[in-house]
Length: 213
Image 1: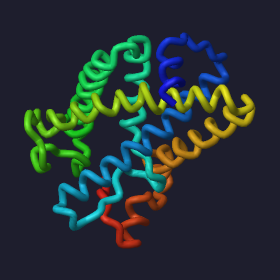
Image 2: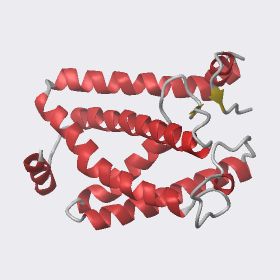
Image 3: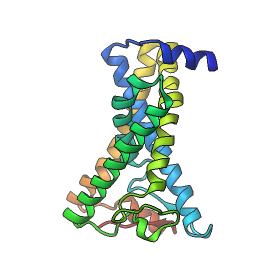
């Protein structure tokens, strides 16, 4: 594994556009699931290990902002992957800005409530700015960027190289489309056609869930 990562760091991979689409699709899925798992674990800790919340707004275990952040990190940090320290700081700063701007736009401009994250009310919130971003969150983004660039991306490259192109691309793209349809359904379709969203159904099942109006 160490040999493969060393090769990954020192090799300028060139994939065709279709294969890159498969790689990007897989990164979107993996990073969104990773973000979901992180938030479920963190908010379980935040509740004093008493309550488990289903995070995000979908049926599937996936949170979109982590996928956006992963794509930004890939764009900004992939070319500097020979320097883990640079990758850490680029990931930390870029995703910190993304989190702050997203929170400000959603809650101060669109006035959507309740807030799905508010560092004013959470543990380990040193350096909190408006409840949108704090030192703990940006450090986590920096560490996640290292995980992304040195584990997840190489894993996706490995699959792209080892699996038949048609199988890899089809699997990755279809899987990504399933998650994206889930997102679109809960954000747009359910609202337009007055259908039940994930929050409504899961609350009836007894799950702790944030309900957005």
